[in-house]
Length: 185
Image 1 (cartoon, rainbow, N blue to C red):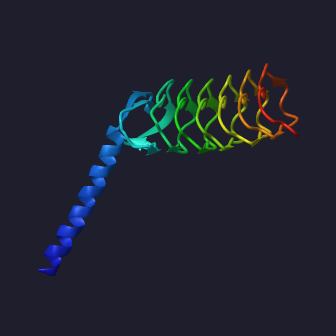
Image 2: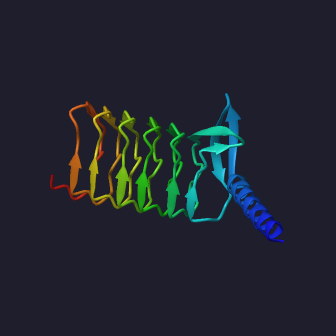
Image 3: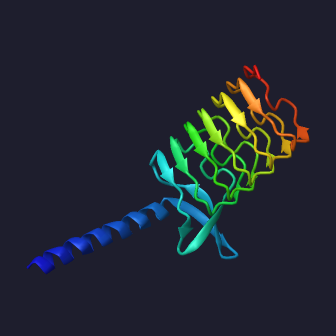
């Protein structure tokens, strides 16, 4: 009797875990190209989202333009497998904090604009910060990694920045990159 009950409980847990994984993957629309997945949309209703690192045994390597646009997200976990984040990908959500994984090398324009970000960790893998990427958030300070060589137009405008650290590696800063802030250093 004990073996049957234990087996039934174990089977229930395994089934529940499988259903949960399938349900999470089902909340995303995506395309497959060259053995990799690009997330193209989010159909779920959760406000706290963890993007899977793999779907159908394939790595998730990119987040497409507009994929999470105005999805009402409060938090998102981006997997280490993602290398590129498209234009307007997370624009218009309610994100307050963000860690961009070290795997990300490209963030297109407006990707995180108009959220409620108070903190962001920019990885050393990034070489350029695109147009208006962090426009209209609540950032108070930011440290740009040594890997970045260019900061595009309005990249950090309309925040609450009081402090910015820009490394010598940055050779180009676009118009209004830090406009409408409260910079003191």
